[in-house]
Image 1: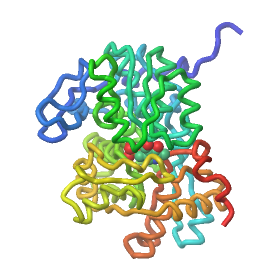
Image 2 (image 1 turned 90 degrees about the horizontal axis):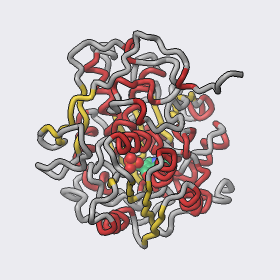
Image 3 (image 1 turned 90 degrees about the vertical axis):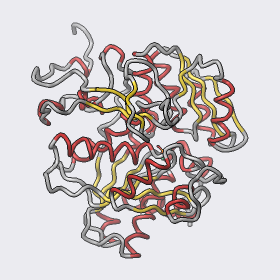
Image 4 (image 1 turned 180 degrees about the vertical axis):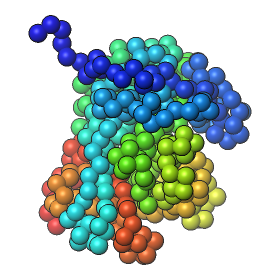
Length: 411
Ligand SMILES: Cc1ncc(COP(=O)(O)O)c(C=O)c1O
């Protein structure tokens, strides 16, 4: 053998665009432009999330944009914000399976029931996509370390990608987070701080710890590029479905990057002309935990916004986000897509996990159990019709959650 085989060294079709179409960053509130060539956090004008925009005026066909030889989220290279490939920090994230669920679909009269299994990502959750992108951009723009408040999975992903990149990682997570999340962070060499409280309490600690701004704060939506990693789920599922979209997409919403990112991808694909002109976009459903449902409370008019919401822990650790910075953006997605929001009890999540494990061979995170039960509820209420194409987004594997769910396979 001469030389080792590396996937990224596969010969690439020379007609594929390898340069990013990244244009600039815009304030999500008012559209004010911000430079994409320096490290940025929230917008100067509104202190709200910045969103990457791309120059899509010049035609970019699917065949010129997608590197079919790359079985990772990086196959959509031109639509991702990295300027130079030498800064790419990748563990093979993305391009996860889209599975048909015939048994549960048959049992509940949902013949077109699908699940995208994000538990099969490196580090066991969809957070790998966002953190691969954020750490790549951190490296590209000269950061030496990153800091994150996390409910668990994002911290593990940050620790892994920083280890890969040779950057420092500081992770603050609730003390009650299952042991496997903490262990993984230690193994990857991160500095871990355990906090009494939820992710908002971790965020307060992060602000203090990083008062000198030495570390890049990659908190959900405070940093613009995790969203770009997450949006690749939208491109992927469209590609996997032959450039059609499901009628309904159910997403377990905490901070909301997946919901907002997938919708961003749908809009970009519309602009690119990759979807049929009359194609209907999916109705987006945000699924939360009963114990912490700020978005549902605002959506249903129980409060004006989430600013004073007080949440409790859930076995779906990722859903315990009491005051998401991206609340307005999530509400916009629900409104534009004719979607809805609902919450699920922890007990129901266990039931959902049980059904997916026993009947489909899928050991999903409680967040995945939640979206399945949400689909059942929406079917029962008539919001979902039996013939519709339903996509469940399972965001993680159950493996790290055993402290929360051990033995609960028994009824
Ligand atoms: C497994 C899982 N699902 C869903 C979420 C919620 O993700 P987001 O905060 O991007 O909405 C998280 C967040 O930690 C998670 O770990």
